Amino acid sequence: MPAPEDLTIPDFDPDDWASVRSQFPLDTGLAQFAAFVLSPHTAQVSAAIAHHRARLDHDTETTLHDGYLLEDAVRRAAASYVGGTLDQIALTDSTTMGIAVMYGGLDLRPGDEILSTTHDFFSTEEALRLAERRTGAVVRQVSLYDDPAAATVDQLTTRLLDAIGPRTRVVAVTWVHSSTGVRLPIAEYGAAIADLNRQRDTADRITFCVDGVHGFGAVDTDLPNLGCDFLATGTHKWLFGPRGTGIVWGRDWEPLIELVPTFSGPRDGARLSPGGYHDFEHRWALAEAFAFHERIGRDRVVARTVEQAAALKEGLTDAPGITLVTPVDPEVSAGIVCVDVQGMLPANAVMTLREQGIVASATPYQQSYLRLGPSIVTSPEEVESTVAAVADLV
Image (cartoon, rainbow, N blue to C red; front, side, top):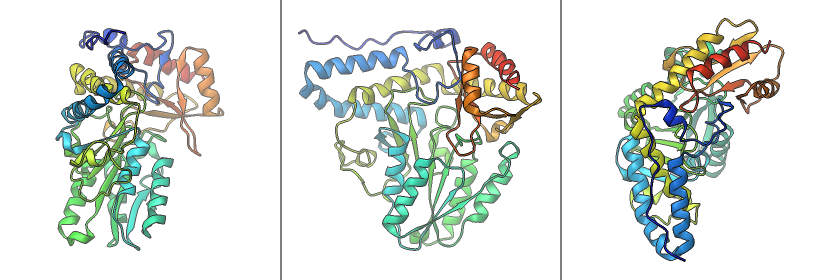
């Protein structure tokens, strides 16, 4: 069997949103407002996956040896996209794995406090429960808002900072809540926690950790500017990277102990990359996902998402029987738009919309809402038709 040919990446016009959309194999007969849940692969990512898979099948040993260089290429591409250096990037398979790397690796003492919130996803709650059980630290939750639609930067900041006590050693938050679409002011938190840490002894300083998955690719900022110590994210949501990939960004890895032996080497971020055999063709193809977004421009990708989210919120604000759950203010929201439909279960709303060619989702929480996620695979015209369809649900 001949050796696989060199990797060829399909071309597209990054200035033409129709060309961008055509890179996804999604059904064009449907308005895809749930694509962010588990991303479809672009033509570029699919080409890279096929190339790496063919190489593995042709000569596994040589390709695995080359994998060290390919991992560095992924980490370098990630650093170019998020800011910082490749040594600040650890590679994982998901946000959940990244959260485990963060919270499982912290060296805590009995009685130390982990301050989290009532708005976090199951993965964070379970990771913190396990950290509590392992170390004797105590988890305490704070509610950051009562009415998500009315959340403000001042309220979100005040409630969190007022909850920090003398025994708080970890602050654990989620950048954008998948339950409501509320985006937390992470940079404001980071600056305030840095001020507190300057007044504390080294052993008593606060480590600031973030589940960043629904902000990553939907908010235009460099991670070093957020002021957190660690941020975990899957790259198969708003980045539309290969399924089963993720990263942890770390300002300084010294506070973390490895949970899983690494195959990637002793350097900083590589040290915290869990080892074992992964879906390497997917992991190595992550470089193409970052390249795809950089070619379009991170700012343009985010602006496209935010503009459509704003149009959805504006169109549904006064619709009879529809209650907007996500804040209108873009400072406290991102791409997710949640609404409550009077007299209809969210799952039923999802089914009804699909019959009209609109793909939505229901938030997987005890209090569930209809959830829409505009992105680079949707269009303003689809937003307009979706506003009308949601308004007609009542």
